[in-house]
Length: 302
Length: 302
Image (cartoon, rainbow over all chains, first blue to last red; front, side, top):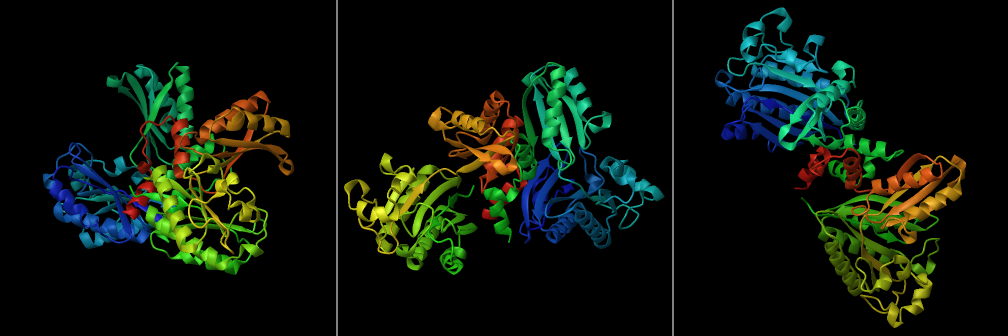
């Protein structure tokens, strides 16, 4: 089985298409990786790039994309709603197939060290690659954001893991890390009762006594006459989609609410859905390479 | 989206590895197709080859594989438990992605005509490609088998669709057709009651009042202390896995039996399992290209 790593860099430009194209162009024809998606948000003034490939190819691509962002963008002129600390704001490496989290942590370190040294951008390792518990969560790494970090970076507790202990004059700093694939999973309830949605979210999420690896909040979908339990599943390999779904269903019953439907936002590893099929159909010993398309994918990658 | 057709030729040699390799070797490095599987059964003295590719590439591969089987094998010396009419016994074309059944019927006709003309092997079109209802089912096409067809072929009702109205002296005849992907799906029941398994199979299968596109029988798994409802799902796009599963569960309850587990034998289109995930998780608007691996597969094929 081929090794497959996903990389989802976020850079601080979501408005000027020529700049976005210039940055993404740096990896468009790079051998060994496949560019799967570029999503640019003008309000956030931020773009999210998704590519996959074998580990060293994704490392090379992540570096080149950062080099392009550092060259093209100027954080001194940047405005946008989304929290950020640099031109290339964050680079997560995500294990997909035949690769463990350890290997993605090693990639994050390797790429972080290279960006720090060759581009002079201070690097913070985060999530599974973090060197201290205080840097595991991205919001903690981003504390004070671009403007605040300019001065905070010289304090011992904000000292970067790689690169100079001062902000790059135009590109700021970058967070580099390793994390499991994240699944954005929303469940709509056939009720207008936002109180119920909030109660269910509270029951389901890790922070208030529910499932580990699950973030959840209640959302009013006023125009659709429904409410939603909006979730992030932070590690579907430990806490699968169907467990979150069934717990929401159970808690919704208590409020007399039934599930109207659900949605997965963005890309998801196919295993997350095969796991649900395995669970509900009680499949024993079903292997992913029994699916024609995944067998084919492995053949293509040999 | 790339067009993808699966082809699953069965040829009459399952014992002599050198002959099998010689035949399969004819398509091993053919551009445009991917050889996914070769399964040889010595008792049946028969091999099943699975490959996929774009339509014209699979047509070319099917012809070359037949040419090799006709050259290498001699039906006059063939013995085996499985019903068969020729060296290349049967060639089904199966629509997978971006292709309709019509296109696979056209492929079957094209390849059948070419085999008849260039190799002098009589061809029977079957399943969706059949030219008469009497040839839709493969057992009907195979009636009398290799030995019996030698004389029957000269009767008007057994006249082949392509090629000469006499058996090829060493390669016999070949059935060429188009059919949906077939899913072999077995459900194990935590009971030793074979009567219950047979009753449930009767309730589920098309032929005795159950679901269309479903064949089912009750099987005793004496060594495991269980019984099994063994099914073929002949068209999962109309009669999906979860519908068969839920109906078996419902009928099993009536016998006080619970489902111990299930299994899918062999290869299956990934959509068949995504459909189950969609159903149970009540997913709205989930597209297959939201799965990382299928997005990647499409990228690889562009």
